Each structure stands twice: as C-alpha cells, then as structure tokens.
Length: 274
View 1 (spheres, helix red, strand yellow):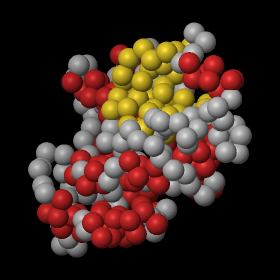
View 2 (cartoon, one colour):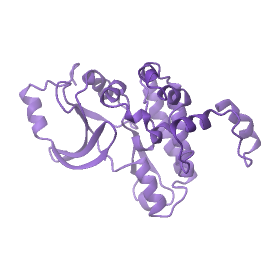
View 3 (cartoon, helix red, strand yellow):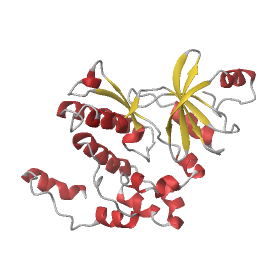
C-alpha cells in the first residue's frame, strides 16, 4: 500500500473502485456501515465511514501493515480525498456477539462455549492484543461486536464451540471521533470501557482530551469484560439499565462486595484488579 494511500485519480484505482459490487449490508455502527462486497468473484467486507475523514490514509496504512493470524486483514482502502472513505477487508461469517447469541438462543448452549473452547478463544484475542501493543497500537473499542469469528469445522453445532477469532474495528481513533462522538456516549459501549476512559467521556469538555491520553492498559480492562462474556454468556450488568453516571458510580464503587462463592485464592487476588 502506498505511503499516502491509493491515488483516487489513477486509472487503476478508479477501475478497482468501480469493480467493487456491494451485495448486502451486514452491519451498521455509529460511525459507518459494513457491506459484503464482491471483487473479482471473491467476497470481502467493505467498511464505509459516514463522512469524509482527514488523516484517514495515515491510519489506514498503519492498519494495513498489521500482519497477525488473529487480526482482520485490511487489503486496501480509499483515498482520504474520497467520500465515503472505506476499507476493503477479509470477511468472516459472524461477530462474536451474534455467534454467542445464536448458540445460546437457537442451540440452547449456555454458557456458549466449553471451558476449553472459551480459554482457546481468550488466548487468540490476547495474542492479537499483545501483537498490537508491540506495534504501538491500541484498540480503543474492544467488545464482542468487534471480534469476528468462524467456527472450526462442524463446531457451529458442537457443544464445545471452538472458533477462529480475529480483532476488527480497531485503531482509527481520529477517524471515529471526527465522524461521531455518539459511540462514546452510548451506555452499551461504555459497559466495555475502563473506568478512567468512561469517566473522561462523561463530560463533553474532557472528551477530546481522553482520546489523546487513552492508556494502553484500558484495553486490558475491556478484555476482561470480553472474557466474562465468553465464559458466562453475558457482560457484567447486562440485565440492569443504568444512566451513564449511575453505571460509572457502580463500576468505580470500592465497596462493591465480592461474590460469596469465590474461592479463597480468587478472593485474595480480586482486589488487585480493581
């Protein structure tokens, strides 16, 4: 990929762009839409951002350079002069949230994964996060919806539930913030946020600053929430409706009691995670 992204004026790029055929919409977030797209007969995922984004090419190039078996591969991207900006990425059948919901609600498997499959899944995600950290990148929006999965063999109907997992929808902090800040105000997303990031987003005047100081360890907190969902089928506080400030207070309350059934070694270890 060129250092400044593909030249949207070149005849080659225009040919590529015209040969992309959107088949169907497969996802929509607060800052863009994902389509299943055909290119030269193969299926890809194309993520379109809702508005023009400056700095798009620089961040797209950074993502395209990532090479890890558990990070979704970005094949190409539009020029930052193009509207809408988009990525062309590898396509996988499900995100983790919909796959877990299908296993629990349609197949009646709850929790959705065996211990072995759950640990394997968590290791895949942690390996991808470790690689991103080694490349100087943070995810910033780690949650079940942003992890894409493909069942292994016939595991879609198997009680074990082994999958191949890949991180998606990462980086692009500047692009996401330019398009909309609604994502960070959404309580559903905030449930996955580290308290220090959550708190910064409660006040509009702090929101820009929080993007600049997003600590790498905040991804680790979100990873813990992902692990909880993998092992139990639900994220913490899934069945409780809170306004943002009430949820923040609950998360940060040092007086939250430990579960009475915790084993002694976990009871001793847990306070260090707070």
